[in-house]
Length: 200
Image (cartoon, rainbow, N blue to C red):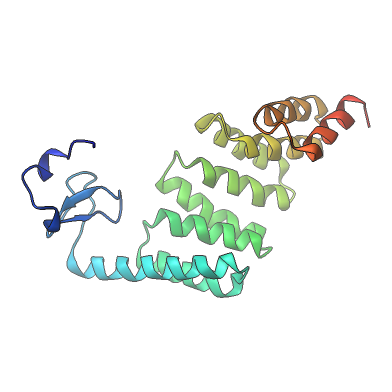
């Protein structure tokens, strides 16, 4: 069991809560998180709770492919809680899956601005840029995702697709080889690699 933070020692667990911003366990009733400095005023807590509930409900709609239902919920969640990184990310992903690729870039960029080491947000922004035909920008996003998380298999695969669209077969082949290191049983990727190496 990991040791508790210094401000929790000797404190009853029933008197603690979790910060909405950093998710760390903190004393209940404090006005500012002692870990990340996030303001926890009463009115803001209510707004954040509502935003969190909206995000959870929207994710249920996403799981059913009901993006027309989820997107307005995510928009309201980030309106209530502008620092809600996950809701910005979810909004961008939902917009992308609904086919609004250009519109999806902005919320994913907001998620990245709030959390610069968010590899999945870079990859998701790469996905919508790839779908929109912005192949150079997609390569940059996938590259950043890989830099942050070198074992990000799907980012190698998607970057290979972007390289292929740009006619860069050598770079695409290398990324497919890297992807197959992690996913050796992916027959579709292996066929793509064989086609590239065979000049097909």
